[in-house]
Image (cartoon, helix red, strand yellow):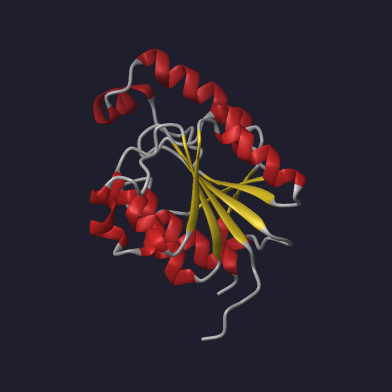
Length: 186
């Protein structure tokens, strides 16, 4: 298979699972598109040897750097001409009672998230209906909380992966796999 010329950077914001991060490294290497992975906030790094269980050594093939804040690297990449793409599903359709029981969220968290969602839902797009026009950075968010509002505000695009089943979201490493291959041009 011939490698395409798409340049993709990856920003992981506050991912919890070292195994998800390891899987992201492995998928990034397999795709051939990813130049760098930026691990921000409390996202684990390859310095933790447990990562190799899922990365299978890919953390040695992909350049990575740790940043306290994702905003620092987003601003840098924007100046370099990268399109900032958040992979996030914005959903206002669940009722409060459903969210309270299934996700164990507090009413305060739900109301705050619904207010934020109204702002971003207008600009989100199905990933399968979008092709980046230039090099891009894919941003992945926390497995439970998603991408923070401050990062969503910096996005050029917010893309979602449609789901047809009962569950509304994919595992972050699975979502990354779909995203990197789609946005890379396969």
